[in-house]
Structures are given as C-alpha cells and as structure tokens.
Length: 105
Figure 1 (cartoon, rainbow, N blue to C red):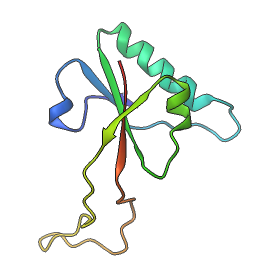
Figure 2 (cartoon, one colour):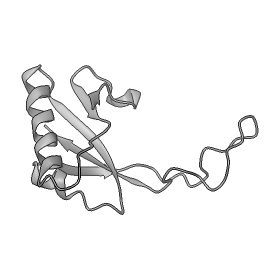
Figure 3 (cartoon, one colour):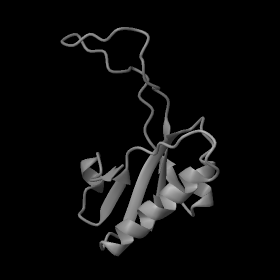
Figure 4 (cartoon, rainbow, N blue to C red):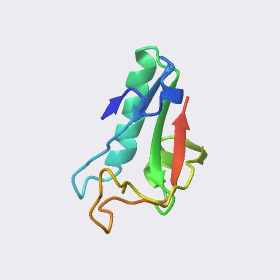
C-alpha cells in the first residue's frame, strides 16, 4: 500500500510512503518487485520521492535489491503508547524499537 506520508514534515506533495508490503510465502523476490513497481508508478505520476520504514533489527534486503537507501533513523521513544487518559495493555503488541528510514528518488 502506498499513500501520503504519515509524518507532516514529509507530506510535501512530492513524496509518497509505502505503508504495507505483503506477499505470500514462496514467491521469490516478490517484495523487491513490489517496491520497485511502487517507485515506477509513483514516479510516473510525478512524485519525486518514495519512503518507507523498517525496524533496525530487520535487514531490509528487499529494499536494497530494489535500489532503496537508508537515509536515517527515527528517534527512539521507549515509553510506548500508554498514557494516563488512555491506558494500554502491557506488554505492547507492536514493536517499539527504533526504525530505519528508507528512500528512493
């Protein structure tokens, strides 16, 4: 899935963000092909930049194969989503580690 960037800073009208990449097991190089196709489609529509995020513990092999580059990391915020007004069940169901920011342009 590709759409407008989640972060307001990246929502400049020239950037799109890959928010999901899902494939069935056993389809060789499917993720790399999807990332490459997403960039071709975005570029054809006039966008100049495509971004996505991976956990730092993930190698990003599919992104590297499709020509993407790591441009930085998110700020690490280990506190999670729990707040006094909206308590969350612990442990967190989603990864709370830092993420790599990937880009192709």
